[in-house]
Image (tube, rainbow, N blue to C red; front, side, top):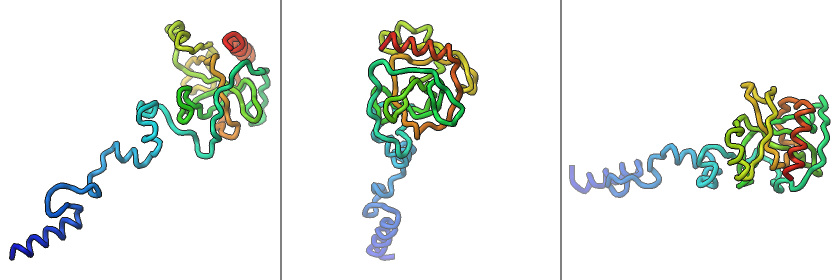
Length: 200
């Protein structure tokens, strides 16, 4: 086989395979895609959040169609226990919804929230966690986080005791509430409301 024909054949095969000029170096178009690259291509938010909460796999963008978050509520909201079995989120009820991170409202986490009131067309709530902060209460307080125990309920399928953060009142879009988890007993709601008044 003449050398010229062999070179042309190698170039033609190389072009089909994405190889540059007969060498063994892969072009960027034919470069194998790693798992990380696939994740970035599938999820554009992974690029935006690569240096923050997203890197730890904890943060996700808000659900499609969510309104821009106007910021946490500042001050003492009007709070009155008023749960109603009407399928709508009411004060005293625990619902599941997307909650923005305090440091970056562009990302957040789906979690249970105790509805405590409203501000215009936004619900107001405080988030729950099953993590026990009793042992590190002083450290949490120094970091600007205060918690109140609310016990167990149907909002946590594993039956774990929960705590409510009382010094961050978040706004919740009522149209983005996924489901009602449970109704908090009134005495626990009153304890949460009193703690919010004390730290506000």
